[in-house]
Amino acid sequence: MPSKKLEWRSLVLGCFKAKNQSLESPNIVPKKTSSSRIFLSDLSDYSSLSIMSDLSNSLVGSKLHIFTYQELKEITHNFSKSNFLGEGGFGKVYKGFFDDNLRPGLKAKTVAVKALDLDGKQGHREWLAEVIFLGQLKHRHLVNLIGYCCEDEHRLLVYEYMERGNLEEKLFKGYVAALPWLTRIKIAIGAAKGLMFLHEEEKPVIYRDVKASNILLDADYNAKLSDFGLAIDGPEKDQTHITTRVMGTRGYAAPEYINTGHLTTMSDVYSFGVVLLELLTGKKSVDKKRPAREKDLVEWARPLLKESHKLERIMDPRLEDQYSTEGARKFAALAYQCLSHNAKSRPTMRSVVKTLEPLLELKDIPVGPFVYVVPNEDTLKGAQNDHDQGGLKLKSEEKEEEKEEEKGEKKEKGHHRHRNSRRNRRRVKPLRSRAVYSDTALYKTLGTNLYYPKQAP
Image 1 (cartoon, rainbow, N blue to C red):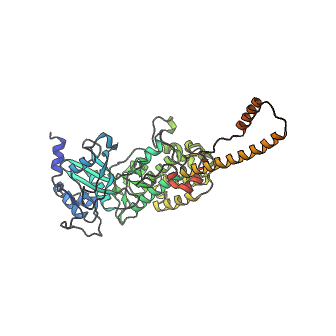
Image 2: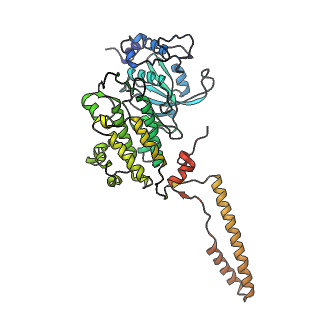
Image 3: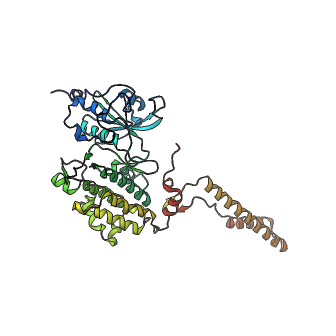
C-alpha cells in the first residue's frame, strides 16, 4: 500500500512552486470575470493536476500571496514550540512575523500560519475550501486570509494574527477573567454580522461550523469567523436545501441536519443560537463533567429561556449580576428563537443583528463593584492632589489647636508629645487609591480597553 505522502504528491502535482509569486501577477489570465465568484463545486469535476492552476487563475485580483514552504519555515522559526499557538482538526497553528524584505508589497506584520496535518481529520478538500472562500469573500467580521502554500505535500494557510485568540478560550478557561456583559454582546454582534454577510451573498454560503472556538477576537474584541474548511455553497434559487454528509461539532449542529442531512442557512442560525446560550450561561455546549441533566446545554437550558423569572438559574454566575436585566431577557428570547426545532421559525441573521445591536444601549446595568482598575498616570495625579489637599487641611487644623493649647496650662512635655502623636494618628487618613467602578460607567468611558489594555502598535 503506498504511503500517505506519496498519495499526496500524486494529488498535488499541479501546485505552484514559484517563489515570490502573487495572485495579482499580470501574466496570469483569469478564466472567470472579476464579477463572478468561483464556487467549490466548480472544481469538483477537475483533475487534481489542474485544480491549483485553475484556482490561481480564478483568484486573480484577490491579493492572495503564494508562499514557499521555506518562507513560512523562516517566519515561524522552523515552526518552533515557542511560536505554537494552538491546534484544531485542521492542524497546528503557529505565530509568524513578516519583515519588510520578505515580499514586495507585503508590509511587516504578525501573522498566524496554519499547517494541515496529513494524519488529521481534515484534508485537501477543507484546505481548498478555505482558499476559495476566504480568498474571495472579504468582510471586517471574517478573518483575513493573506496567502497560502501548496508545495509537494505541504498545505499551509497564512492569516492575520488575532491578538485575543478565540471565544472558547476567553469564555471557558478558568484562569481568564470573566468576559463582561457588554463585551459578550459586542462579540455576538460581530459574529452575527459575519454570518449575515455569508448568507446574503448572491449564492449563499453555509458556514456549517459555527462554534465558540471558530470565533476569533482582535485586540478590541471585534469578532471574526475563521476556519472555513466545512463551508459550502448554499442551495440554488429553485432548491430549498442541499443534502450532504453530516459534518460539524457535537452540540452545535441543527437537529434537522443531524436527522436528514438537509442543510440550509437556518442550520447556521441554530448553531449561532448555541453560541448565544454559551455567552449567556458561561457553559460549554456539551460537558460530560456536569450533572447528567445538564450535560447537553441546549436540552437543559432552552426550556428556561422563555420564562424570565427562571433566567437567573442559568445566567453565568461570574457576571455577578452586572448585566442588564432587560438585555438578558431579550438576549435569551433571541437564543430561544434561534434554537427552534422548526427551521422555518428561526430568524434570519439580519433579524438577529437588529435584535442584538440595541442591547448595547440599555442603561439598567446595576452599579456595583465589578471591575478592578489599575490606576493610570491621571488617576495617580488625582490621588496625589487629594492627598496634598488633605495635608493642607490637617496642617490648618493643627495650627488652630496649637493656639488653643497655648491659652491653657502647659502639661508635661513627654505627656504632651504622646498625646499629640495619638491625635495625629487618629486624624491621618489613608491615601485614596484604586477605585472600584461599575461595568457600565467605565465601559462608556474606556470601551474594551477597560478590560484589557490596548497593545501598542
